[in-house]
Image (cartoon, rainbow over all chains, first blue to last red; front, side):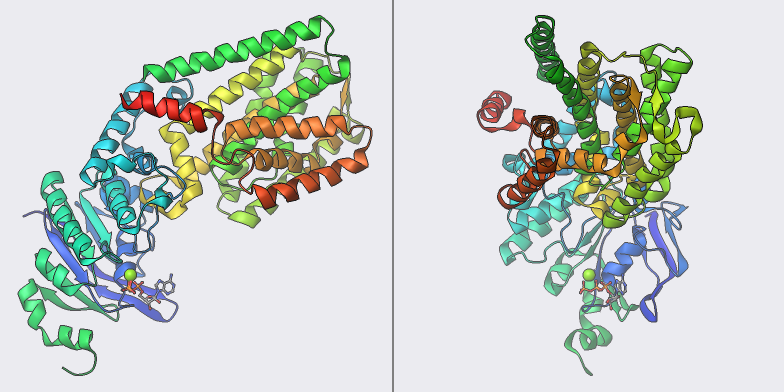
Length: 255
Length: 316
Ligand SMILES: Nc1ncnc2c1ncn2[C@@H]1O[C@H](COP(=O)(O)OP(=O)(O)OP(=O)(O)O)[C@@H](O)[C@H]1O
Ligand SMILES: [Mg+2]
């Protein structure tokens, strides 16, 4: 399997706080990897480092053979990493359909003049974007809500819309930050099946943060465990389940 | 997609009908000189409010320097027509280009600022432009520039306005416009979806400045003399009021806002002291009962019956 993402001793300091230190992970093409850890462990910060929201204080990040250091978030997205947010960040006043359409932005080729005078590639590409967006919405069971305002969707649907939007950016690697947060068990189950399905359907590689242990154990092939910014364990679910450090980190105190 | 083209043609057709009616009334003498000038000003103000809406309403960047860009277009225009005898169209384009260039140069550093800071920076910028013009003797300084040929006619203001509206409408309904709207909605998410937010802020600012420049050129050639006091920050506020009153992110709103504000100030021309009071009252009432403006984020074509008919048609 080809290596898609590799980080080397990545650290991030916030003032005196080492939010992430010596973060070393690798992800192969097509894998579904979990990143877990207690509150404040640095999981979201790790995502922000991978997507260029923060620049690492030290260390290197290589994706698809290229270094991501110094790139802006939009450039990293264009290189093939898309993400969702822990605290949902939809374009809330816009329609569900427009939310998805926006994510096709970097794949649209028509220029400003073609847009303003509606010539050349404009009509053809706009039609393609609309059709593809509707198709994605269908996959995420949002097709009947395409023209609703995003903020009026129920919580679970908003989470699904965020994933649909990230997929519209056509990434190689998809980062999901607690996609099941706030969902009920049945919704969570459906979501997990959906994640597995889109991975095979789109040939994706996925890294997901999740609090729900059983869920992560059930779906991920390998798991990284973060505590106080450091990776304390790494392995297949079976190993993680019985790792004394992980048990201690999750249950608190000495195990 | 054919329906889009059909709607575009319908809109242009409608524009031409409105033009023909107004032009007819003017030549028949049904509209007097005072209201004729005010119709000119309404058209020019629509250009200004639509272009400011692109920056403030669609892209969500709080700019308060529109009168400054207008001044640049006005002065470049009058110098070119009066001193160099350029054709009107070229002078307008040159004025727009000069304002766009300035907008782009200034946008690059200032658009890194957010919210209030950007408002203050653009406000200062508008004032700096005015004061610089006031100190250039070549264009008459504070006394103003005189001897401007009266080139602005009704077809000019009307069709430049129609052109502006079409350009802004098409822009916001494209991937480029969606990028701008995404910035307004959530800058971090926009960037995460692959939108170069700095680039699109500068693009919106530059297009907005360009049309403000063109509007300035049209405005200046309505009169024999212009002077820097026509382009104070109060004027920028005026355009902001039009945009906010009409509704941020709505072109229908920009038209309505330009109409209402120009109409109020024309109707109260003899009582200037009441003007500001009425503005203030209107704005306070609006904030209470309709904070999103008359048409916040909604176009006339999306309202009620029209929308329902469209949806029914669209699903077939
Ligand atoms: N921009 C920032 N400035 C300063 N400190 C920050 C910043 N972002 C995160 N932190 C701190 O870094 C640490 C890690 O935070 P992070 O959000 O990455 O944790 P997390 O593992 O995602 O937690 P949770 O499970 O609650 O989402 C926390 O102590 C947090 O307060
Ligand atoms: Mg987090």
